[in-house]
Amino acid sequence: MKNIKLTIEYDGTNYCGWQKQKNGVSIEETVENALIKVLKEDIKIIGAGRTDAGVHAKGQVANFFTETGIPDDRIALAVNSLLPPDIVILKSEGVPMDFHSRYKAIGKRYSYSIINRRMPSAIMKNFYAHVPYDLNFEDMKSCIDCFLGTHDFSAFKSTGGCAMTSIRTINYVNLFKDEDIIRFYIEGNGFLYNMVRIIAGTLIDVGRGKINPQAVPNIIESKDRKLAGITAPAKGLCLEKVYY
Image 1 (cartoon, rainbow, N blue to C red):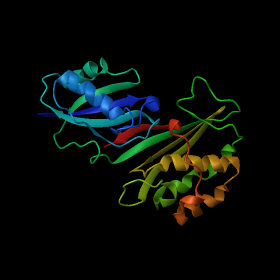
Image 2: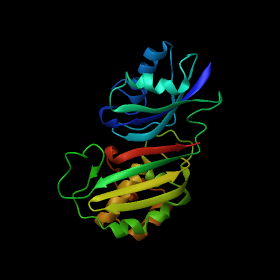
Image 3: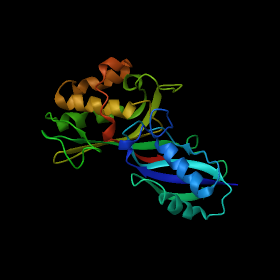
């Protein structure tokens, strides 16, 4: 028996999310089915976290146990031959038996991408949230450091999550602009349900002038979801990396 770690990239557009569900095809189910065909075993994969429908990943991580004799690094090649083109196993590697993709994770990095112009993009429509309103980038940039540190992020979570606590630590945030593209990066020890999308939505509302940038610290302190911004569309969100 050995423990195999997978690093997975996917376009989440055509899926109901990472987790297996009755109402659609998931990333988890698709990868599992391909593994079962290749390894001829009843495989159950463990994901580092759940991404919602339409959310993408460049560095999702999963692990599973197998008795296969296929070399660890060759598993990725074999499984990719059976996966649809919008899911790719970037790497397969053997890890210690006690490695758990979820419980051993110490942090995650997400990005949120916006295309800010009057007309949407035909080419980038699945990966960028389209915001047709003028955004004040300097106002958006001025308040991102408020999210750094350890806070109760209750104002930035949707109902339906199962987290035991709303306290999270954010150790990196940044916002970049290149012509009509705005990209937000955030890294922390964990994230609540829809937390990154609500922070991104709050920044969008700051850019539109609907929320004063100076009010953001008070919104965090309030723990009141109604004071924060919109939940930005899923398609702009990407899981960049999981840290161990």
